[in-house]
Image 1 (spheres, rainbow, N blue to C red):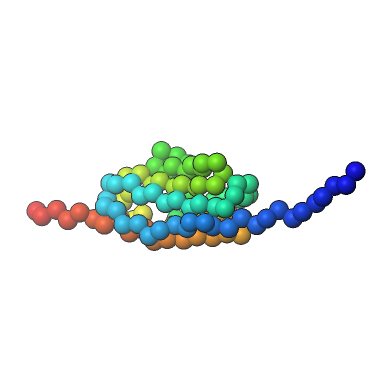
Image 2: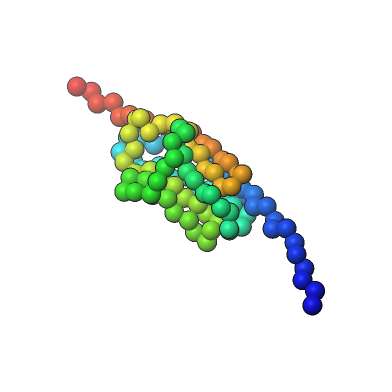
Length: 104
């Protein structure tokens, strides 16, 4: 009986995050596509703070390859750098939330 052992191929980022501009109150969606599933320690960050799945922050994964972050009802203070980390892989993009000026 011959057992063949091979090192697991390192995943790579196929499609990284893209800079996104939205207006206050809108949703901002970031997507990162990996070459294959099974990457451990997947985490999203906004300006260095870890994000968690809740009613404002939607984190989803499709087939373990496509990772999506949606920030709902964004405010000006949400502007910053969104970072996706999966193991040793990192992708970042800027989120710019534009205010709507109301003439008084």
